[in-house]
Image (tube, rainbow, N blue to C red):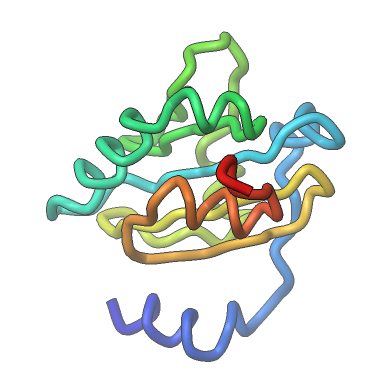
Length: 135
């Protein structure tokens, strides 16, 4: 937990996060939201509910969603694309096993958002620079 707080306050610190090889397939095509859902609390459940309630918005905003849990990577949309969960966690400097986190990768391959708390789809879309459907 202390590591998460320090990362949010000071940034990632050590090294720059690199785009994992298995995410290169989305470059120039889609934003990718990675949810690290190993936490032993209700944050993964809350995040999953927020994402599923706004699934159409995610599709319209070209945001692909993967959950990393138990050493595997699972697509919210089950589109058949595979990710290397260990590579994604390491290269994106994801949280340790047993911790919750999410990372949004933009279409340009850069990290647009990191959080150790669940976030609304509106906030995620805003971080990806996608305009609100009401504007």
